[in-house]
Image 1 (cartoon, rainbow, N blue to C red):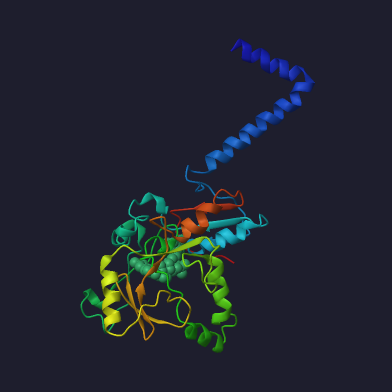
Image 2: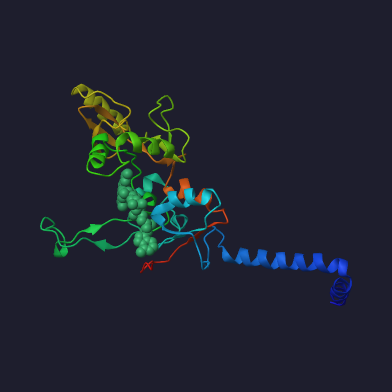
Length: 283
Ligand SMILES: Cc1cc2nc3c(=O)[nH]c(=O)nc-3n(C[C@H](O)[C@H](O)[C@H](O)COP(=O)(O)OP(=O)(O)OC[C@H]3O[C@@H](n4cnc5c(N)ncnc54)[C@H](O)[C@@H]3O)c2cc1C
């Protein structure tokens, strides 16, 4: 104690040591304050009073893109918890468990439906993820771009920029696709798209399809295929049969939280807050 006292007196009386001493103390205090603001996983425990953008967790992609330049301060708000709190979420074989985790799902019911006779009050359960990454953290991980005609019809009806040729470039920007030799698919994006090779039954179904005259068509994401699927097997109407392409990276679910949010969470201009249910938007 005596030594500390004499060190402080020494610093206070020696003007050369005073300035660096004060700077070091202030930096230490700021550093500790910053550390206390984040939990170990990088989620903030308290928000600032001003942000340039406040977005919902569905915007993991936006959170990454908006914070990339460092020009904007971004807050992402999620009503549920972090996806890493649920052991079933990263494991593809436990997808059915992930999407029934009560705390990771919104417990919403539909409005009464005429055709919903089997359920109480004719209202059925609707599934939505309530967790970082939203639905992408609890879904079945089947990767399907959709049919080009749907996009083109939206554009024709007035959604400028939603035509297939335009959105295709955004799909490519997003994808890291396992089919390396195809230039209509993306290969440098953060979202891993891999082949689901888990089930032997899929090989048998593809063989059986060939016997019935439906050829194998390994890629259904070129925009021209109508798709029907059974488990991890897809019958591409008129176009062929194949295995599902999935958002799985090295055997683990590649959600938008994993692909976009986690890599950006160390940026000081992006704050993520969980267990925060937005109830009102003020303008
Ligand atoms: C069980 C299941 C299986 C699926 N399987 C597939 C599949 O295999 N392939 C496929 O392409 N699609 C699948 N989907 C659909 C796909 O996951 C969704 O279409 C997609 O996630 C929707 O994304 P989004 O960004 O619009 O919203 P969401 O992913 O629903 O994200 C909305 C986010 O906002 C948060 N939020 C909502 N309200 C508030 C609030 N008031 N305050 C704070 N936060 C809030 C939610 O908690 C959630 O995290 C599946 C969905 C489910 C539920």
